[in-house]
Length: 72
Image 1 (tube, helix red, strand yellow):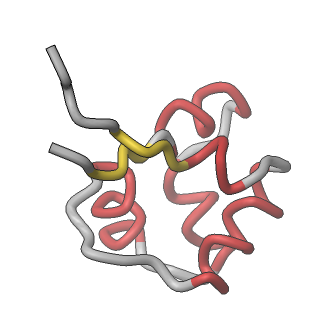
Image 2 (cartoon, helix red, strand yellow):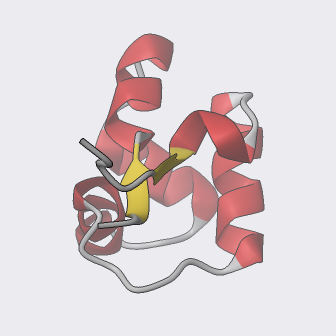
């Protein structure tokens, strides 16, 4: 099955950023940030993705990864 793996929690840990601080900095609720981290959302606005990247000093590819189908 193809899909997107969200690596937001990994980047937050690498940057030593707490969820409440990041949520406040980019202007979303902690609950919405938690949903993003868990991958339980169907989409993300480019504006939100850009704010995450700016706050975490990273690129979109650092936060999102395409899961390729298992062909074995």
